[in-house]
Image (cartoon, rainbow, N blue to C red):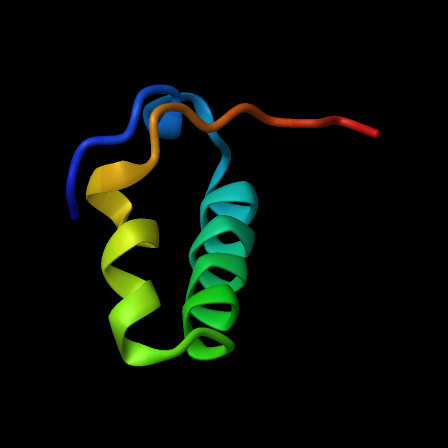
Length: 50
């Protein structure tokens, strides 16, 4: 996995949720749009305890 700032601070459950949400997001895009939203393009991820 490409290093994403803040990913190491997430719990296992938050990491799993992040990966599932990202995969679901990518599956909703056309092939040519996916290149713009790959893991390499994510700047930072933060936990939201709410």
